[in-house]
Image (cartoon, rainbow, N blue to C red; front, side):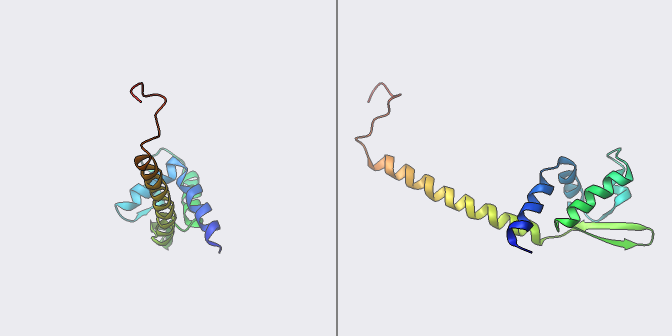
Amino acid sequence: MVQQEILNRVFASLADPTRRDILVRLGAGPATISELTEPTGMSLTGMKKHVQALENAGLVVTRKVGRSRQCHLADAPLDDAMAWIGFYQRLWARRLDGLDAYFTLRPDRTDPKDPDT
């Protein structure tokens, strides 16, 4: 799968507050779909759809244990998303540092909002 498609699925999944809550819960350890449903008041079918979306994005891995489906976090897609975010964070930090240096080295520039210049 193309890297961009993976990121699209990850960010689309993270855009939903219910799915973010599921990820927070699974951060504490594995849980069944029934256990994830209990505090929400959501139907089991609704929760299954959210878990399936997270699974399709590669954020959650499920496995059948008896009659239950056990869910736990998967690492790789979040690592990919963090790498993407980190790249742009560094890019913008460099650009803002360059802008700061430009204005610091150009004392002839005046601030139109500052009456003392």
